[in-house]
Structure formats: C-alpha cells, structure tokens
Image (cartoon, protein in one colour):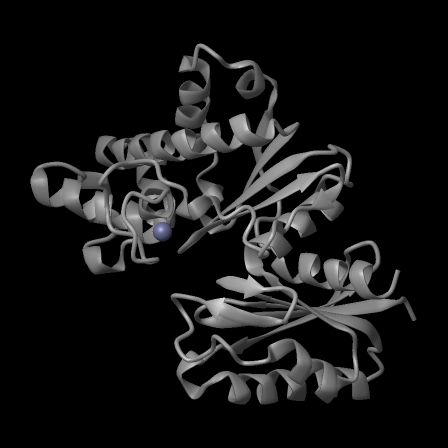
Length: 318
Ligand SMILES: [Zn+2]
C-alpha cells in the first residue's frame, strides 16, 4: 500500500475529500455538503465519519491537510474570517481534527492549497518562483518563492483578490470596494454581464438563447456564448480580463515570478481571459517582469485537496 495523506478542500457548498499519494495521485475521493449553517462541529463530525470509514477499509494516512476559503490563522489552526461560512471563525478545526483522527493536521487557506497542488504536481516544482491565482466565486492566490509557499506574517500573503484595481469601485464581499475579486470573481463577472444585458435589450442574443433565465447565468454559459460569437459575452470577458490584468501586473511587479498560473473554474475561460491580460502586460512601458513571466491556465484547476494533503505531509512528516 502506498503512503498516503488525506486532503480536504472546503468550499461554500461542497467539501472535497481525497486520499493522495506522495506523487500527488488521488487514490480515492468523495464529496460532502458543507452545510455551513449546521455549524463547524457538525461538519467536523461528518468529515470524521467519512475519513473513519476510509480507514476501516485500509486507507491509512500519515497526515491531514484541511483547506478552507477565508483568512486562515495557520499558526493556531482556525479561521479568522470568511464570507461564506458564518459562525465558523474561531472554531479550533486543526486541534479538533488532530484529536479525533489522531493525525498530524495542517490548516491552510484554500487558494494556497490549490496553488501548492498545481505547483507540486503539474509544474513538478520546476519554476523556483510562481504566483497562482484561483478564479472562482472568490479570487484567491498563493505565492511561491525559492520553491517555498510564502505565508507572510499572519498567513495572509497572496490575497490578491482583495488588492485594489479601481477607486472607489464595485462593492466586494469583503466589505471593501474596488477589489480585484469584485471584477474577476464569479459574482463580479455576472454582475457586469447582467448590467450590459439590461443596458442593451437588443444585445446578447446568443447568450439569451443559451440561458433564457438570466438568474441562472454562469461563467461557463458566458464562455460558450463568446465561443459562439456573441459580442456581449466577448465584451464581458474583455473587461473582466482587463481588470484581472491590472491586478496581475501589480502582483508580478512586486514578486517578479517566473510563472503565473490561473486556476479555479473561471480559468476554464482560457484565451478569453489570457488575451486581455497579455494586452495589459504588453502596454506597460516598464515591462521587464511582465514580458518575462510565463502565463497560463492550469490543466487541473481544482487541485485544492491534493495541495492540502501534500502541504500537510511536508510540514508534519518529512
Ligand atoms: Zn475585497
């Protein structure tokens, strides 16, 4: 039997769970509803039930990585704040899981975990420096310098989603305005799309045909509409990619990484996002770092479980 670690990636709706080998291969996976309103203790019970049943079937892990969206206090193993999981901040997840499962446990921000997963498995740890940006409901990020994940003084390093790209700007879920997330997170993208649709009743014909109920609009539908030649959908991606480019350019100027990797569901928009980002980079006169960086979308945009497992392993067992 291979040596294993368990990885958990808790999103607002579902939590993904995986048993991962040292090489980052997923041997078993499952998903449970997050059901945040039932509270963190209830979630911990349900997670321990799944991992307990895996163990009884012979999956013996050496560590557990627990990744959650929000401001994670890595040192104390709990959440400081999070927009999706009301009532969860302050709950001692790491200690509760460590005690219940008798496993070395590491708690990490979900974007850091996803970036580490992609860095270790997809990129084979080759670039020494990298910025990874997760594009989903929220926008998160992780920074690798000299082959190590950078956490900063409070574990908050890499929170690119809440760096500012506009003033005063659109409202962000964090309570501020003008954050990158308010433009490049799913809710920012859909807000723009609905606004353009309202302003131009004759526009977005393909989009309206693909999605007659605009409440059900998703980035995936916007990508399909753009692929099928809808100019309004293309404009949404152009404007989203431009704001993303502004945020990414600032991050690249600060860190000067070798690679820039986009992850998360929205990164599946691929060239619709990459083209405007590259244009923003080209337009900067002082562009040494921006021209040197290798920019691309991850092949597996959802490596949060794998990254959480590998990080836990490296920090507790190796
Ligand atoms: Zn914000």
